[in-house]
Amino acid sequence: MEITLKEILNSFRRQLAAHYPAGEIDGMELIMLDHELGYSRVDAILHSDSTMPEFVADKFNAVAQRLLNDEPLQYILGDAYFYGRHYHVTPATLIPRPETEGLIDMIADENTSADLRVLDIGTGSGCIAISLALALRFADVTAIDISRDALAVAKENATRLKARVKFAEADILAMPLPQTPLYDIIVSNPPYITLSERTTMERNVLEHEPPGALFVPDNDPLRFYNAIAHYASTSLLPGGKLYLEINSRFPAETCQLLASHGLADARAFNDYRGQPRFVSATAAK
Image (cartoon, rainbow, N blue to C red; front, side, top):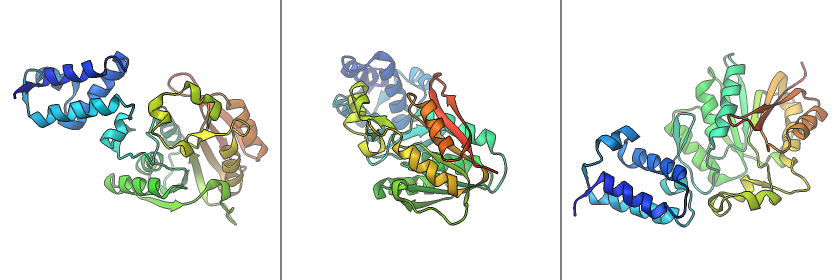
């Protein structure tokens, strides 16, 4: 049976219309076009009346059915786009968010020297560590995570993207302090969503993304920041920088915590949506 691209896309949209807002469907359609056909929106318009192989229609229909069960599209395709590159993702890793790209911009803009030593804590898919390894000049990048499954994904991404990153399994809540400072930069996007915030979150996140990479107790929302700051206060070289993605509810509290660990000039920065999203601080010189 012959079927045109226009008919495939119309069917895809009809199936999702009652479950997702139109803007979100637009985004999913663009991702599918790129992933399955290598098409942009303009390509889709130019080829709208072109006949497609039946397997293309079958793939769009199969993905639509999984989307109706609230599976994230990135997990269905095993692919997420971050900072100009495609990353393999699985349910063992968080899906990279566009807000986090601002963290890469900040670090790359503020650190133009070569041969910097960088530590990424809680690397997940490896998107931060890999982006920095490719953005900074001859950086020596190490990335750690508590999850072996996540590390396997991160290593695969680093190999495919030709990024030099060393990976290690470690738990920041139990990491021994180094005897001498090691790093010019420490960066982390740790778990920071409080359990009480679950009620405001979408099902596709709650039911599919790894909870250990998302949530912290309401009575200890800065648990990971405290551990990271404690480690950074010893392991950053003099004048080294700590960069964190944060819960937008706690910018002042996070800055105060960093200062209590002897880190200087702790400041919060907004993301592209105008929300407090990042904090940086400096080790004493």
